[in-house]
Length: 109
Image (tube, rainbow, N blue to C red; front, side, top):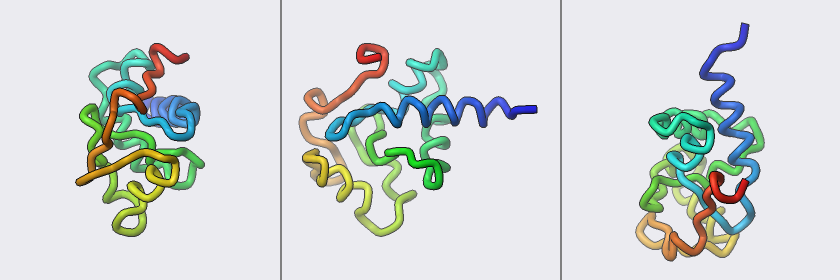
C-alpha cells in the first residue's frame, strides 16, 4: 500500500522537474498547484528528500525568494552556485528580481 506522503512527494518532484532552467518557484506555489495550498512545508520536506530523485530542488525557494533549503545541499553555497550557474542573481541568500524569474505552475501548466 502506498504511503500518502510518498505520493505527495512524487507529485511534488514531478512539478519541480518542470521548472525551466533559469527560473524558480516556491514551496507554496507547488503545494497550491497540487491542490494542497496549506502544504508548503510538506513540499519542503519532499525537496529535502529529493537528492536521489533527479529533482532540481535548488529551483524551489520560499515565497520571498530566500534560499531556505540551502543547508540541505552538500557544500556551503551549492544551492546558490547552482542558481547562479543558471543566471539567477542571489544576494545574501535571497533571489533578486524574484518577479522576473518566478515560475508559477498554476499559470504555466
